[in-house]
Length: 76
Picture 1: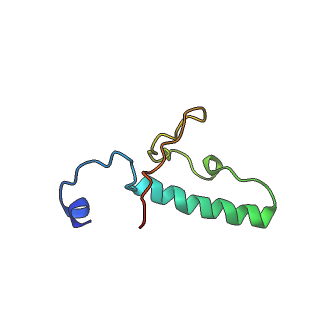
Picture 2: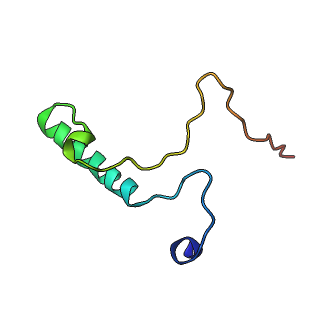
């Protein structure tokens, strides 16, 4: 973790590392939920702020493709 914060960690191929955009989006999800509870209306995050690009996300598997399963481990 220290290498990721202060050093030169290699890029994460699964894009699990959050950046400032992911933090802002997570806050905006809470703001949108609170506004939805108050008004009873749906709230779009794009209507709350302008100019905020979505965070990078790892690609999702195709719905038609089989999901890889973890290796089965035998317990004696």
